[in-house]
Image (cartoon, rainbow, N blue to C red):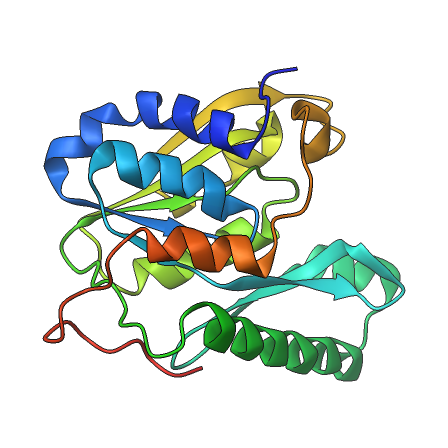
Length: 224
């Protein structure tokens, strides 16, 4: 088993990212599972920690199957998995309904986790997007595309584990990818952790409290 838990995965990932410590990095975590991993990375790199709230758009009768993803922001970014939609006959109405539901969940999480906390400005800085693993890549691709629009000097994807083919498919979406474990066949992210219990809202809030928010003259987080 490669990782004891998300904290262990974060510590191992931080070691692989030490070369970025002197480059003013910003660490962006995908909640909830990516937050404990990202906290270890941010702490080791002496970097600010912020959230990148992304929701998978699951097929209505098979929520684990991603037909796309949506990312928080002033103008939410939607990524569609057209191959999945075509193969199972998803209508535009069904897609829009799921998208609306997930945008509401994004807003709930944004208020719950962040409230009025200001966003970390990634413009001109190294942005390191962190999750606890990648499966299909739909959520990750949406996160990377949204971060690219914020104009970082360099965009890095950092994850403990992912399928080999998914990582290769994401090469064009990031300037650098750091993935500790690549496997094919893959199965599920949970198979590579001894402890993969769900991260709670309270844990996310407690972790963010350890990292100071940007100063008052920093840009305000865009509304969803």
